[in-house]
Length: 145
Ligand SMILES: Nc1ncnc2c1ncn2[C@@H]1O[C@H](COP(=O)(O)OP(=O)(O)OP(=O)(O)O)[C@@H](O)[C@H]1O
Ligand SMILES: [Mg+2]
Image (tube, rainbow, N blue to C red; front, side, top):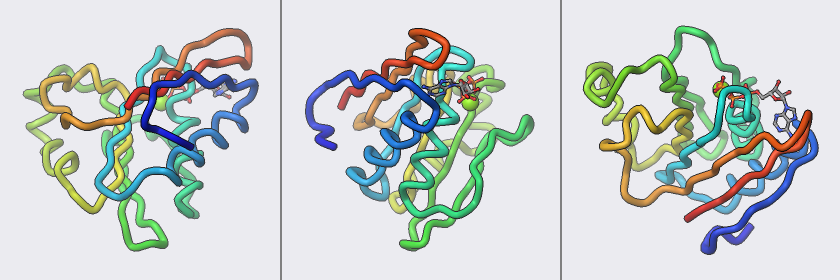
């Protein structure tokens, strides 16, 4: 997928969102960061699962209640960090658990749910995927370089 210009794509199922995510993953490189914006239940974790699968990750990506950062080892040797910052109050408390070390890892793909919690710490160059609920199973994904 060409990620150099802003575009909006539509999904009609969980599977379709996973497929879009895996295509995006294939167009990125280790070190890249994807910000996942959208309301509760929009599909950010579903997207993350498809992204991980697209990179050949065999582990099932989930969102455990008390884990903020989940690390996955990819077959390529790169890592993937899946961060869910919903329960993080602000940038200061994120620094308290060392969020900057994950964000600055040049060999890891980063997926960040609820990036609005740490707006001041985000890298300059990120891909933003904003997922909007359009219906039961319909979602729009606005992809911004
Ligand atoms: N087209 C679609 N794409 C993604 N998810 C969909 C779609 N249609 C229905 N769903 C459902 O929407 C829900 C999305 O849940 P998910 O956990 O991914 O949301 P989230 O954005 O990560 O929420 P949270 O902010 O709570 O972490 C799932 O139950 C999924 O089955
Ligand atoms: Mg989630």
